[in-house]
Image (cartoon, rainbow, N blue to C red):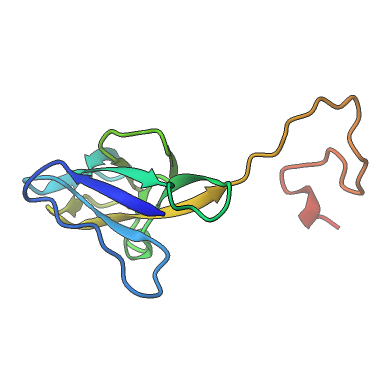
Length: 148
């Protein structure tokens, strides 16, 4: 499998990862610093579009790309919106950043803002059922398993 990357601007840094990392660094493709107000949000382009080339895949799997926050930003109150990028999407990857802090935060040009992770998708056969197998939990949700 290959991840084909189309760089949309000449100044876009090459997508890379480090040994042992699960994701690729996504950077802010902006020309000027961007200030995100306290409790505000901004959508930032990354300057790349991608394609998962599965011609050489080893199993009959489908894949998605996941955008994940960076831990270095979350400790400062900046969180990239977790999201799914379908394998058929060919447009620029854009990241919505939320500033949960009470101070303005500046995003610099080419700053790492999120991670891109390739994940397998398992699609089971969907069947209609009149009944589901009962469990001890049943239909109790929203924190019910933490109550004794």
